[in-house]
Image (cartoon, rainbow, N blue to C red):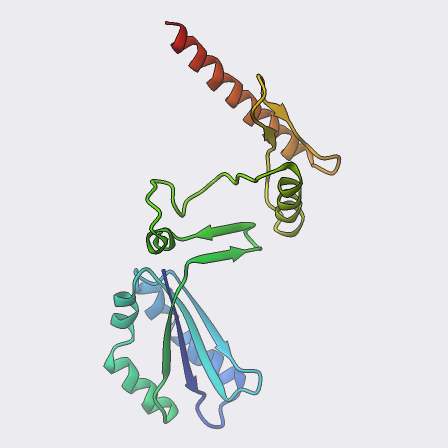
Length: 192
């Protein structure tokens, strides 16, 4: 993923309301761009500089959207060329959604070859204390749903906290049941 940061001078004498109205006028254009994942409209607190943060699937997509014609329109409106910078967006923490996303491109850069690289749904920790700290942070700070079991014994051990809600306790039971079923299937296949 590519994060594009575009900065430009606000038109002289424009109020925040005028800048916001101009932003609303271009909503249909950006909604019609199927390559654009997300766009944030920004205005510096003193109102002198406007900015846009765009999330794109590729550098080429960003450059197609912000071509020379677009640059000239910004110069005409603001009196100066925009400043554009591109960043590799490899990790995203979204506390509102309770999600952490690592994009697969980051795994490619690191040389990790795996079908699930960048798409992990499970977190593995080295010990109980690290797991407890991680679970508490995800649960209480990011409002994440969790399930906890301990592996390595003959049967899965359900591991919940006194502070866990009913949803977490039920999820832990479900994960333990699925794991136990999988183990029984493996034993049955090995016996055949």
